[in-house]
Length: 110
Length: 113
Image (cartoon, rainbow over all chains, first blue to last red; front, side, top):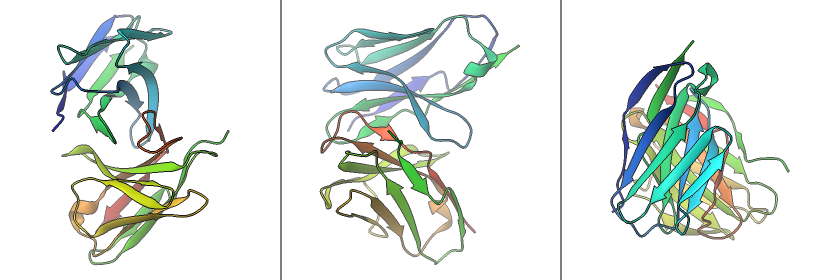
């Protein structure tokens, strides 16, 4: 059974800092890995999707990497802003459903 | 294109009642998956429907059921509600069966009292 773990569970940083969120998964047989953002009480917004054959994806200030062999992914956020405050979820697609981590709750303080 | 829509957005029910949630996928998408999100368990897969057939099911009791209509709209039903069913229920659509890229709706917040 695929297990997805995200570390840290919570993170507080001052505005302007660069930060890294970590995601690990137990079964390397994945089709893709996706990072989502979730604001309180809201649905999921897809940030980046990395196919299993890819090593990284970039969108604006966000960069996600994937190391399938070691079962790890990182989400790098450059020059953080208060508007980045949210919960970030990592999910792997292994066959028919997404397996999610519990998320990292990020607070960026002005 | 309009995104995935879910109705209602908020719902309050009493223990023992039943509830039906609705999901309309992105136009042209034929697969709909349902997920439950709770603070304790996080996001968990409930089931997937494609072409009006349930293709996959997560580890949930039989009180949780669903169906899909010919226009790909899907409903999820929970019978004999328990306090632990309080959660955010998210629906996701994708183009094909077991779609590798899923697009999520805003969710339905169910509170059971």
